[in-house]
Length: 168
Image 1 (cartoon, helix red, strand yellow):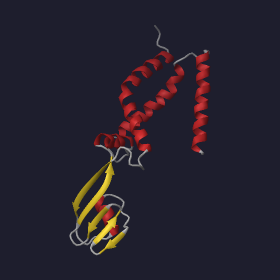
Image 2 (cartoon, rainbow, N blue to C red; image 1 turned 30 degrees about the vertical axis):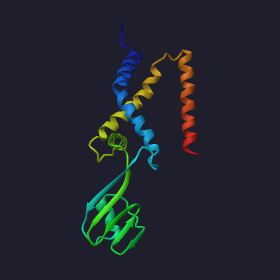
Image 3 (cartoon, rainbow, N blue to C red; image 1 turned 180 degrees about the vertical axis):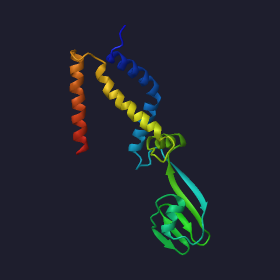
Image 4 (tube, rainbow, N blue to C red; image 1 turned 90 degrees about the vertical axis):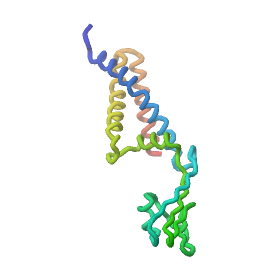
């Protein structure tokens, strides 16, 4: 049997799809969870005590705690920011925050990886694989068939819908 481009594309599409099934599920779940990142959905409250240098200003707290710090008020030796406090005399910071469970945090970290992360290559590989799926999907059916023609219409409808949503 002669290996045509179409047959070759279908074989790669099939096995790459099986190979990436797990990562596609993880990206799908983490993407849905990230939609709710500005809410407390699935988050639990965590209280962390950190000993910092005494006499830090509100502007110096953010980099020390690796978070955004918007000072709400200062009373005596205590700086209040959100549900958290910092005692300028003792240097004790009590930070209250809401976090996703560890597994979901890891999934979200994977989804948001940048070149600073050692796993960014996985995102590049996944993106290229998805682009391959887009292209190889057009080799699944012969161009003269009605399924292929309907597929073109659905693809165009998806493109138009996406463009409309982008500008809403």
